[in-house]
Every structure is written in C-alpha cells, then in structure tokens.
Length: 72
Image (tube, rainbow, N blue to C red; front, side):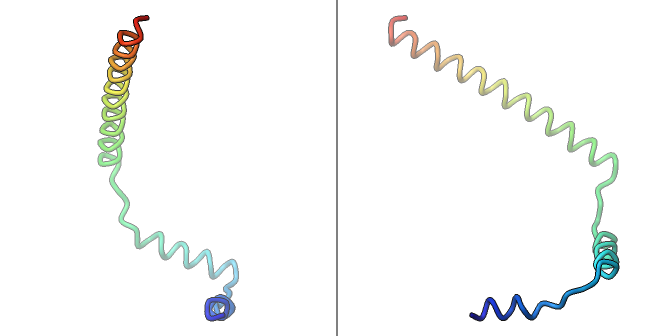
C-alpha cells in the first residue's frame, strides 16, 4: 500500500518543463573528448579480436581432442 501511495504522490510535469530538466541534466554530464573516444574504441576492437582468436584456438584444440578420443 505504501508503494502505491508514493507512486500517486509523484508530481507530474509538462513536456516543456521535462525537456528543460533533461537539458539541464545533460549539461551536468562530463563527456569524453574525441581522442578518448577513439582510444577506447580502438582498445575495444583489439580486445574483441584477441578474445575471438583465443576462443577460436580453444575451440579448435577441444575439437581435435574430442575427435582423437572418439577415434574419428
């Protein structure tokens, strides 16, 4: 019952007030620089490639081992 009362007591704002509040909150955000974004993107791509290679090699070794055990 208490949760329902809290939801009913929330003040509703109009769309213009909401957009002003969104813009004000957006201005408070510390955005990364273009250089930082590029560096992070490159890092993610390199790590994704390395993980893909690792998983491929692991899968290949396990497949070879299973085929050896099965005698195929």
